[in-house]
Length: 208
Figure 1 (cartoon, rainbow, N blue to C red):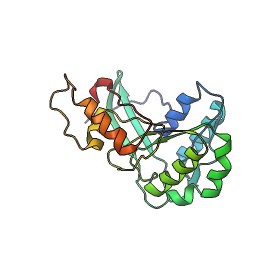
Figure 2 (cartoon, rainbow, N blue to C red; figure 1 turned 30 degrees about the vertical axis):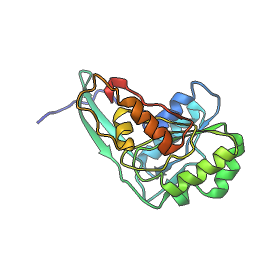
Figure 3 (cartoon, rainbow, N blue to C red; figure 1 turned 180 degrees about the vertical axis):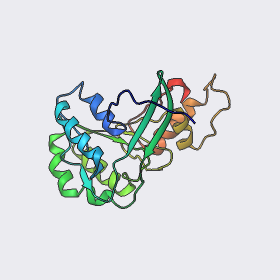
Figure 4 (cartoon, rainbow, N blue to C red; figure 1 turned 30 degrees about the horizontal axis):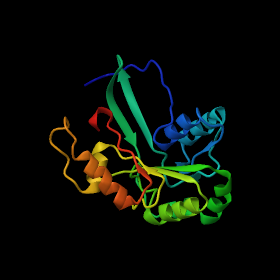
């Protein structure tokens, strides 16, 4: 049985929170919207965000929902194991992002990025309402979709699936060989029509 002697610990935001952290390098004002549990992770977040000047006032804190935490055990620069503490939930997103709060925030923002990790926060009704208001206000709206959550990403500025996600969303079988993606243009055209987006960006990092 592997035994790891702990020599140090570090804490970093992941998922959509990591996207917000990266965006902060390019703009002075970034905010995140999501669900956080009332737990130890909330305390870590609470002390981290002010140092990065990222607004978390629109996040909901729930005593019934544990903050998603992924712990990586690293030994000699290699990951030994990852421990996931998470819980998917349903029908909570409507309570966490109310229409009144959205309308109040919208005039102050330039763009919205949906980061869908398939945990249940993003649902069709919520996404459709936000997109409709944002596009009416001439805001940039982008999405990083999740194949496990088949949302209708209609009318966005840009949708950014990776290669496997794009084939899945287009309903086209993923080629066995990734050396020649002649069908990739067909996938892109299919998704442009399906999502009615201005742009579809398919990332190919390590042939995802």
